[in-house]
Image 1 (cartoon, helix red, strand yellow):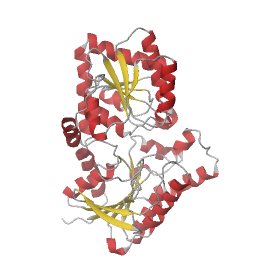
Image 2 (cartoon, one colour):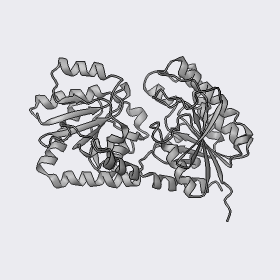
Image 3 (cartoon, one colour):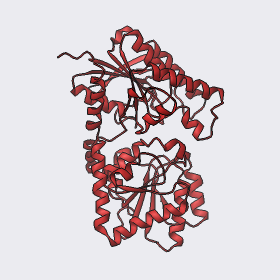
Image 4 (cartoon, helix red, strand yellow):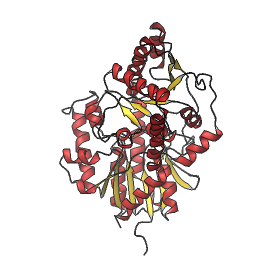
Length: 416
């Protein structure tokens, strides 16, 4: 039987191409959807978020390119560095160009519009309506719920009110509401909308690529390879959202308790790094070592050499009650090592797979206790420690993009 849905447009401001940016969710989906016989085009901004790269260097409004067989259309948008006015202009430019995509790019049967910001949904809905196509909205971050939970605005704020109205309007217009958060259905229930359209597909990992990078991009480091130490690793941006200060204070407690062979190795840069390094120096916390920036392809090698990995986020239990979807978590799991987290959340994957431990989010003492728990397991009960490692690998397989893409195909086929 012929498919009614053949041509799929993915509209996402931050759909990075492989090996250029770090947000590859939709590239991975598109690559796998091609194997199922779908024609997929990704419409994304010419700017690569968190980099200085702009894929359009002339006056062209659109630029077509292909990456490993995946079709990309870059929409020209202004380069920016921080969250200032230039980024706002960048969002608006992408929005207006996504609203008026020329007919020369063909016609979609399905428009898959992915946030985080709701302007992408509006542009996606217009394209779906104009082309009489099915429409999926994907929520990767709850806007404005995240800002409200972080205290950046109240629900009575005029911008928050507008964003909430857009959110409800878009969810009502969608054929499918897709969440990366496992508790998305709870959120839809909370705001009083129809839950029958809700689906869940988390972020994930391409295990084949991960394993190849681990093999081909080895990272050598004296601290990491020191078998006398129990190495706890964090990799990623050192931003406020990660709140590494709480973890560092936990390591001061660990040092004060006399566990001198437990080390915290931080692979990342920018953000709060300078302030945290100053705090470490002033308080003589010599079991915390900043390693700086590393090539993303070296991360699998780094993680595989660790004993334990840290997932740290700001303490926002009201927001995280819907679950988690950080890309970092799936890299951690793929390394086959346990994870310790200070993110109290609903639908806790560490608990579900028994591949790590979630401690009390606002307590440095709890984090210290949790790290020492794994240290003692490693030293005294290696069988139990290895079981955590095996469970991490099992969890990673469930979140391999081949499996996630199968779920997406099921969602698409339900719209036939």
